Image 1 (tube, helix red, strand yellow):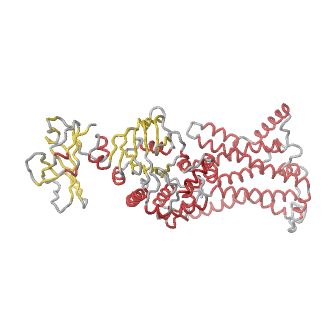
Image 2 (tube, rainbow over the protein chains, first blue to last red; image 1 turned 30 degrees about the vertical axis):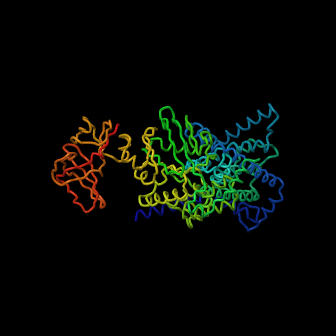
Length: 265
Length: 375
């Protein structure tokens, strides 16, 4: 009897936690479809705010910036992180534990510290060489920097999970070094790469702090635009943007999860 | 003239039909292996191979036998090119391949873990080697069907790797290596992960495949029974040194030293405490041998002994007491005590009297069956 009570209590707690996490999001989504320009009362369903979004040049440009930034940085991080992940795997027997800690560090570093140091670094470089003017370029570099550890760790863990004799079997079956990459390694880690891409994508779209410090005047992303807009008050338009972002990030996160769970088949 | 085109032209001018493969008409020349002074060290302390000279004949089923850490796997990996020897030469079919990387050697391996690619179907696993060599898709397909037929894989070809049992994986791994038609096939304890029944079934199958193809097989195992069943010749290794090379009967019946004798399962080894011509003094008593060896250990194989009921006097007759009897149907295994010394004997069950535990018996052995060994 007591056991059943405990069970019910835990179940209730689970629903409470879920509600706590998702109700605020639900409110935003709901009010993005509100016919009235009000955050207090819901008067009817309308796509009015979405229409308004489509006509707002500033929002469209921020949206484009976010997309270009997320895709470009994710692709670059995928390439570099994949090489690092493989390197970590290949040399895992040498005592390189400290290197792995080094890879973890950017993950645990507070974003604001990371953002400020990136900004200071870019400013110095710009002062000395005239290169790296704040803008989409510097943002891409900053994003790639924080995405790499995630990609490297995902790729590394996929390699560690493989039977090491597979690498030897590929050699034994006449695969040259290049063919081993194309016909064995890349296909084998493909699910890991796809998962890493979507994770990088979400991280990039989510990021505000680091973007804020490394952005230029023309390169505002959606989070930066929202930050600027809410200083003038929360408009239902913001709810619509937020809803679209929730959708995009949820899809990317689900894709990442699906591919990371998929067995190497 | 482009080298690959020439090689392709030669390959296609000698088509190997399904019938030829099935009938075992060895149109392809099997290749001999020569090893000279192979040395291999891991780190500073571990010597894996300490000067191995060995010739493996073309078309031979050759087994490298020894305990773990004896260097047998290292030797196999050097043949495959997965490990590089520190010193020494290696030639296959008269061509020196010491420096040739694994993907350019006409050698294929059946790995202990099978190492089937999880991202590929069974069919694509089988075709992998052919694809890497640049064979066209249609020809690959035909080859894979041919080998699947030959190894009797049936509908396994269309399955996924993770749907296969251990025995099935083993056969796919064998087929994947065979389909490449290498000069030499290497097998690294390919049966050790299987249960006993399946194992002996696959032993027979493997042996038949080798005889039909006439391919040179180099087989690694730590199981002396398996080695004796399969091999044309066996090399027994210990501490990176070859102890003996010979056909199974020779290695079993005339081990070169005490290590080989113990490894082949012989327990009846007794120090020779004195020697006068053909008379040997041992803890068992005085025995006459036909050989003129100088070894300090006497080897008595259990199956060469006979047991007579009661006490019978005579040359090479030893009074004994039965301490233990394991009845195995086709034969019985005995533990006997001669004074303070124990002795194993195996008696064939041919309707004869099988002494019971506690019986007093007389052990007899022919002088021809007594040999002496060195440590």
